[in-house]
Amino acid sequence: MRPLILSLIATLATSSLAAGAPHAPAPKAPAPGATAPATAPPSPAASVPPNLTTPATFPPITSATSLLVVSPHPDDEVLCCSGVIQRVLHAGGRASIVWLTSGDGSELDLLVVEKSLFLRPSKLRDLAVRRMQESRDAATILGVPADRLFFLGYPDRGILPLFTDYYITPYRSKFTTATSVPYPGTLSPGRAYTGQNLEHDFESVLDRVHPTLILAPSPRDSHPDHRATGLVTIRAMARRNELSKVRYWIVHGGEFWPIPRGYEPDLEMNPPPLGHGLSQTPFELEPEEEQRKREAISAYRTQMEVMSSFLLSFVRINELYSTTPMPSN
Image (cartoon, rainbow, N blue to C red):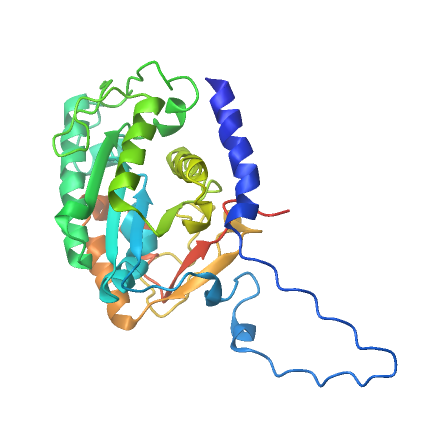
């Protein structure tokens, strides 16, 4: 199914124009003999770091906003989107979250949390159930109701293969040995692991939520599940002619990023190296939103045991979103 990936790439190549904000017209030169107008005072945007665009490129958040956060694994949604989730709910809008996987492919979790050196499928499935419950706990802290949480249960570290060689033929997880969704509480328990089924389930979530704003991983993220999740979102929204509703975020943005590591709540989040060339938009958090974000991250107890310094690095005074999935030139 390699042609499908080529189709995704073609969609991605055109999506920058579809999702980007319109360019302002160039200023006209003064007529011959005319006096040039005085230079305007710098706007508030002048204080924004040069790699960031102004907050005006982010759509207004109102009671009519229906937000959908598309998360590859349990915890990604709180790292990048906690502030926007809270802002939407505070405005009286709706916030929903969909997780494509349940995080059942972490050998490091198996070592640290389960104290096991051996890859045991049953233990990894148990870990996924725990991570799904932690997702519910984190969502409760942010205020997202249970009926707005959607677990798809597809294979961790297997999303990209579903769109290369396993679009129709079922994929077997090398971690859990499952070939279909094994978890209760998911959207389609028992659904075979194929790209076609994943797209069907994702479209089903879109039909339920009717999002006016989607926050999804950037295809520039270094993690293959994140890149593939971004492509799934782009492909689905392109079919609906609604790519302009999508904003993109990055978790795995380059070696040692975010800098510095650890809990630094007074610092701003700087653009990741892999986000170079993207129209990064800062979304400023209120102090109480930042505090609740930390609480939501801490609800992921399994992950905090493994990588707390990395997770807490995302508790900063702003979150970053791009209007385009890839650089425009």
